[in-house]
Amino acid sequence: MDLRLLDVTTLSALAGDAASDYVLEHLRTLGHTGVRLSHGYVFQRLLATEPTVGELAESLAITQQGASKHVAQLEALGWVDRFGDAHDARVRRIRLTAAGRRVVEDARRVRAELDERLSRQVRDGDLAATRRTLVALLELTGGDVRARDRRVPLDGRG
Image (cartoon, rainbow, N blue to C red):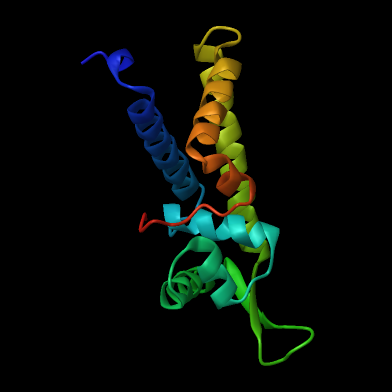
């Protein structure tokens, strides 16, 4: 099958899935053995804010029970912790630990290395054109707002 004959929607989904798998595999080789795709969605929220479980659930478009499960997994891995709110001790907030920040830093580095490898494989300007095309696709589908606001829902993945 000639992959160039596939529509852009299918190609972008397949490429995105393959790139995510690549990043996860490399993170696991770096010692982040418990990392899952869904953890990245939670990390993105925790980079922007220190939410309660309810706020996290709302931003990820999942139930509080689902958010609690993700937080418990990340807490067991040492990547997040819960702490009392400065204004209301009854409220528990979630934040990345230093180990969680290392996962984020390693993921950024792996993605940058993948970008670099890709830029060596394609012609000058092709990578920039690909970025413009994918941004246009996000804008046409309304995904740009969610991406900018780090409000990409889990949708049951990973």
